[in-house]
Every structure is written in C-alpha cells, then in structure tokens.
Length: 334
Image (cartoon, rainbow, N blue to C red; front, side, top):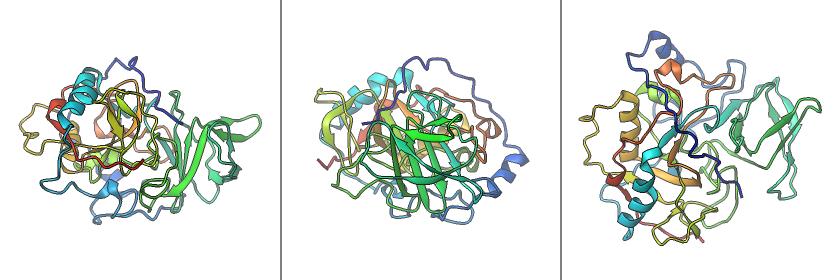
C-alpha cells in the first residue's frame, strides 16, 4: 500500500518571510481556487467570508474536537514515542517534493484512461486531466485532480508525454463533497495515502494561511506508526512499528488548548497552524521518514503560491510544543 516517502534528507529550511499581506493576496482570496476557466467544485463552506472547505460539513475533517474529549489511556506513551522523539526534524510539507499536488480540470481537459501499476482492483478509471498537470516530485508523486464534485487521487502518478498516457501506482475517485475517506467507517480500502483517506484531507492551503484561520483537522505523518492496527476513521494502514507506544494510523492528536499560542514568538502562519491543532487536531494519515504536516504544493495552474502569503517551502515545525499534544481516545476499525 502507498507509504509516504518523506525522508530525513529534508533538513534544510528556508527562512520564513514576515510582513503584512499585500493587497494582491487579499485579491487572491476573492478569486476561485481553481483556474478561471475550470469547473468550480461544489465545496462546503462555513461562511461566505471563509475559504471553501474540502469535504462535507459533517466530515470528520471539518468537525471540531468536543470540549473535554476523552484522552487515550496510552496518550503519554504515544506522544513521547511518535511525536516528541521525532520533533527535531518536524516540517510543514508544502514543497514541490512532498506537498500534495493538485489541479482543477476544466471543460477543455482531455479524458484519460489511467492505467494502474501497483495496487489495482481491476477497475477502469477515466478522468479529465489538464495539460501540463504536475505531480509532486518526491517518490510518492502525489497528484489530485478535481472536476466538479469528483476528486481523482493518484499515488506514483506518471505522465508519458510521448505516448500521451497517464498511469499511477494507485488511483481512486472519491467525492470532494463527501465524507473524506475512500469508503465507510469499518470498511477497508486503500488510497493515495496509507490510511485510506481522501488525498487532500487535512492538507493546508496558502489561502487558509492568508485568511488567518484553518477550519479543518490537519494531516500528520510520523515514522512511528503502529503495525496492524487501524484506528477509526481510517480505512487502511501501512503501520510499520510493533512498539507498544507506536501510534495507529487514523488516530487523532490535539495540541493542548490551554497552551498559550499567542504568547509565542512565532510567525503568524505558525500560530494559525497551532490554533488549528488546538481546535481540530490532526489525524495520522501515513508513515514517513520525518514528523510532518501535509500541505498542498503550488506548482499547478490555479494554485496560489506560498510566497504570495509570505511563506517559504518546507519550514520547520520543530519549535511546536510536541510534548504538549495528547492522543484522543482511539477506537479500533480493524
């Protein structure tokens, strides 16, 4: 099953650009997320002033953590082993290599029959893909294509220009307005991320940083994922560790809401991320070489650039208080 290739070699960090957002960024918030000539997705939105959300308002991605949510009895052990122990290399994966590549298909986009090369169910998937669409450049080669209410997720996406042919190690079509996983709870299915979630679930977008708040749970990767255990709402796992303190894919973690985020000498973008981790938390979605939160890449047409919102690529998250996280009560979905 697909596993993140996010590796420890991502050691260099760009300096985060500070400053006030320009009027051009405010203009970007008012334009469609996709290209002007593409079909707009029927996305759920909390209000007209907010960036439209991926997946339904009832999705686990878009549901805040309840006050006094139950904490798992092994929370401290999992936080120590799977988060704190990996914190020195923690990163926001928004770069060209490990960010989630995504693009909107328009009426002019060509239909392709996408060949499957690794995890195949014998199905045929035909989907429009815009000319010049680019997957992430890391070993996962993630690419999501949105057309109307449908989302095509590809892992190890590859385009053969000479043959004009797309293929992928796995490819799944799901709904951008749906539940946020590739099948129902306690059903088992794979996808472009190992936990079986829709690929864009939890990914941070530049326009969310620009608006100053993220209104959904985030997607977390760690090297210390538990082998053979699927935590609801995940539908699959590639967990690799037999350590009793490894964390299952599908587990939800939360930054202690009592932690004083505003009192930290952090850039504004990092405070926005931290507050989302307090309100919505993050789901463990994949196994990786470093501790990381997923974000989208900005290489495709219609993507707002990270630089336009004052951010570098692959900024460090090592100074987040990883020891102040807790794991919410885990339910088995094996």
